[in-house]
Amino acid sequence: MSRTRSVATTATLHRRTLLAAGAASLTTGVGLALRPEESRAAGDPAQGEAPVAHSRQAPAAPLAPYTKGTTLATVAAARNSSGYRRLGDGPGWSRVVRSELAKPKAGRAGRRTALAAFVQLTDLHVMDSQHPLRTEFLQAASPHSWRPQEALTVQGAISLVERVNALRGAPVTGRPLEFAITTGDNTDNNSRIELDWYLKVLSGGRIIPDSGDPRHYEGAMSSGLSLFWQPDSTVRDQYKQRGFPHLESFLQAATREVRSPGLNLPWYSTVGNHDSILVGCFGHGDSYLTEFATGDRKLFTVTAAEARKLQQSINDGSDPKGLGLRDLLKSHTRAMRRVTPDERRALFTPAEYVKAHLDPTHTGPGPVGHGYTQANLAEGTQYYSFRVSDHVVGISLDTTDPQGNFSGSIGAAQMAWLERTLNAHKDEYAIVFSHYTSTSMPTPRPDPARPHEKRYNGDELLALLGRHRNVVAWVNGHVHRNTITPHTGSGGHSFWEISTASHVDFPQLARVIELVDNKDGTLSLYTTLIESAAPHRTDFTDLSQTGLAALYRELSFNAHEGSLTLQGDPRDRNTELLLKKG
Image 1 (cartoon, one colour):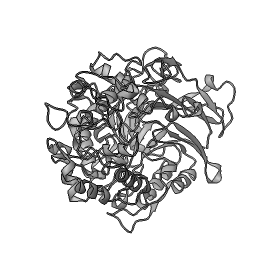
Image 2: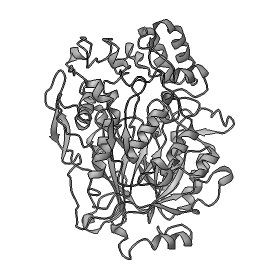
Image 3: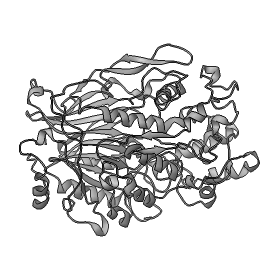
Image 4: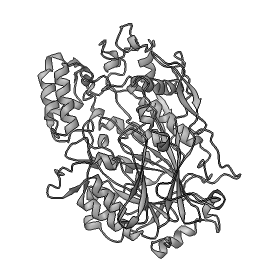
């Protein structure tokens, strides 16, 4: 299959004037946004290409292959086997060759040509842990409904940015990284203050990870309730009974100003359910919940039966408007505690999400809008395509269920746009990005804004992708677990679905992905997992920004009592994924 770029001649010539002759394999792709055509804006998706950002320059000396700063070298591991487990440096994870879709041929390492390299960040869940609409009270029925590390999401995300910035390039090929992309759940409570923190983490800036009263922490960890970890208090809570430490001045340190250097390469944003709907589960529209978000009351405890009932409605999607949550809050008015109201906690709409990305304050290294454009704003969409490199296009989807649902789906207009975009770039490789996985999009529900539009499930999206021989990968998150799945569509066209663990739950990972042409009729996708830059070992007396980032990882490990389930199998971690060229 010919891979000549399917773009307008003028755009191709303009781009090539930016590249030194013969250096394409050593130059990271100039970040290019492709117009997000759909509905009335529909047209040839290959038109409208324009340069918007430069990624960082190739280093002068060869640097590949290398392992430093990746999980090939070392991975956080427990130093003790019971109680509260302290972390230290563990052995790295080796690379696994997966040949379900193509057989490896000898000598490919000497023949290969790098086509693209980038970093996937997913499920950062940058969080205002004092937000009135947090549902910590579900802890009454489920011991893992609340995370003791929740106050440190900003420090942890900044440390991940520091790790990405320190990478010398792609670990296998040495190709400079084209870009980073988030695959959703960038925020946690659909709150404006979280959106501001997230954008500053990735673009750079100073952040005070605090809301409400600047003098006092007003969340679960200062409630005095034994249901939650009380780090500053001597209360013998259920977490301290498991060995969690007493840390004097922890909450003061956790809400202290921090600084993010911002990513030093272009980055793109994909939307997730926590970025679109209330607590990632309930649609917008109820005035009581909207006002409660910025109000002066917060509920910490309910009965186990009440918690189970609400949790069940979330799990089965039977209450998309959150009426059960509203009624539960109303019934416990007297049991609520007073907190300091804060307008910055207001819920944001999809349009406000796009506007925030377009704000010049948050451009950082670009591109402007981080994938989103004025066309998205005008059309009310959150999907787009963009230039990855000379022969590769990226496609970012919106798979959230706007009605209000923990599961995902995709609308007919977006499916038609996706088909057109893949057809327009049929002679290039395509990498698709979304928040939801194929298995977490089971039962489509109507979009309240477009009640007559058909919506599609994960199997139907798989079928569409499988009809296009230029699709090589579908990269996503949501399930907080490392999983890599081969897919073969109609006509024998195959691609890999790559799902990466979250950064809020252990093992707190991101993933470097490299696409290479082996020059033997096969392609390889190399996946290499990375942790944040924080040291594996923690020091309870170190409450600096870096010390808190290290503690963030250790607390997340102990929150699930040392479970390694979310790491996935070795075949889901550091891999070489072979694929036949179309």
